[in-house]
Image (tube, rainbow, N blue to C red; front, top):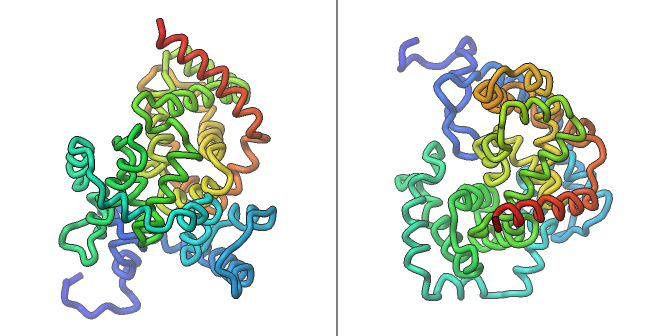
Length: 347
């Protein structure tokens, strides 16, 4: 097809769809536009239905209360126009923002640790190079906002400061909220309350939860767990990026956002539900694996394709396939696994 020809109804699906997704991410050259259009035509029906229900729920209200109805609505998906509001309320970030007026600006004006600032500055250009919103040529460019949020958080939580992975989380928050201060308080909710010790220098929370996942797999998919053990596969090797990046760059954007919808309301157990669902889906392949590289390849495979692209049925599955998963169960497993890790590191 000539570049200058006027598009007609006969144009291919690829030519009809923009090369950048709604969140600013460039689509790869081999992007399957036809399958995407087919998928979105179905999902848009769901989004429209959900949007009507959410509009009724939020009618004449600027605030919502945590309750069973809100939880049910969140699990079924938050329309993008309401995401920032619901994340703020569900996570407790809105309450913290209102309790601390001017605090964010105070943090920006403080004297910052030069090493933290240098590390943040180095990572700015590495944050979503495939997203047009983070390019210096973009107007507005989110790099400056990202720099501010990360600097402020490093000042706010000096024990953590800054570590890799936080830039991607802050970047996602900025894409959705389009607001520095809200993104800062959502980071505080995630890193301070929902995922404590994930980003501390020792990363004890992250290490613990990887071991907890192993214990859950041992009980719920024993043959897959045995294959992992037989091939000396460490959970850190295959799932650390899942947890530390909260599935960013692991799963499709729309699916990640649906996971985060639930993460802000229900907490870290959502990360386990997603992991268990993926592993359960591919458990037969894991059981048949002949080597460690085989298993690593299977873990890459399980985060691609229609199963994870179709975010609405996928989210329905994470609440059914893993079965019951209570906070009490996670608390007990965390205590045991944390004890083992601390003992092992003390030796």
